[in-house]
Image (cartoon, rainbow, N blue to C red; front, side, top):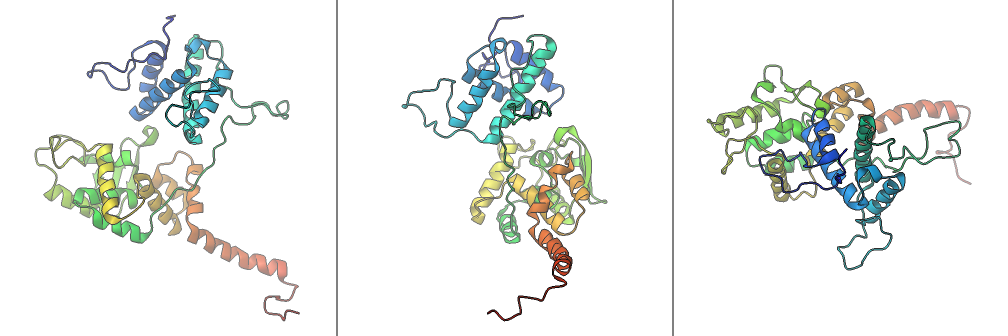
Length: 355
């Protein structure tokens, strides 16, 4: 096999080459493998993760051992850019490391890369440990302590007043339609941008998601407000000569008529947030807002899962915690029974005389 260090990545590749392709050796082979089974953004993230890993470790892939991986975790959490325990102080402030979720994602990418090399026969074992061993390792093999301990945080959602303020700050029917797709239909940002004209089921008030997360397809209902905004956009704003099949296109500038990019959508939301005076209102928060309100309104958890396009219902259960009103009402109903069962033979102390 080639002795070229896989961390040497060509950052000056000609523009005609796809941006997710690297130039050399094992990393390039792995990314080409990923291209056939993952979305473009996943491949781009893998390229970034592997570049960071090999820049920190400073070794060829065939020389990496478990100690290097553990050192990489520490370096990431402490903000260092190498495995050296002591580094100069005249560098960019590195006292704050990256988030635990980012470290976990990078470890997943690194583990996948070495698993690929192991399968090909380039290395004999995966240097990424499955976890730290515990005293129960003999009775429960393979269930050690995870290398990173992730905490699941509840996502932020918007209040009805914030949704009204954001919608009022939008300047075009196109923008209102995109926001409605997220806040009323629960679509992801990539799903909104990926909508095609043929994906609209106007009579059914549904849209077809041709390429959801993980490549899954689904057909989901969306409020009539979304379709009204889309109709106004198509009638008055979408350039007549637009050749793309994408529903949402650029309305001004040299790229007029071309597909709207993720950066373009973020610029739309950033401007609307500023005009509305909102501190937060990201695409994912709009999606979370929709799914939370659907659960609060009594929509079955399985139906919310289908609307969201979650592969596992465990991902949908978070909306049980976000739907505070629903949870409180469920508790009050159960608490009445609980109270009568536990205190049926005891006097009501809340109304008695305190001595």
